[in-house]
Figure: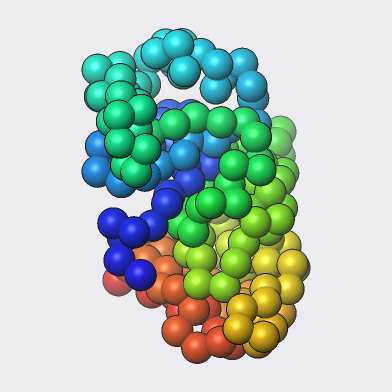
Length: 186
């Protein structure tokens, strides 16, 4: 499937996710998802308290969606709206605790949310800074749901077995019915 035919969800609308959603929303169908309803409402009003957004670009991408319904940017805090998505970009924070250990809770919660709508052939990209093997662990969590496509089931073990890190350049859709292909930056 070509990128122009994909619906992209940017999960987490902070200083990484919001600018990414705006830029992609100028050319593709993008759903900006955040668990905080107040954040989504703020963005829908065309405001950004973090001052990270290009407000003019955000307005253009939102108006593009309103006029075409095919490309452009919309915002939601409703996980049900992710059912139409086939490409996920996870941009949630990975804070550290007082011992400098990463708190993967946001990453795990985002992965669980994605897992409820994930289908065979979907692409998941993590843009969160995490330690080696974290994505493989969370891939298992989000993919626990068995994916059924053309009567062939793909289990979480099939997907998680082939997901690794550290810097994902691109994740190719399921090339075979039993493996997820991942490429890394060199």
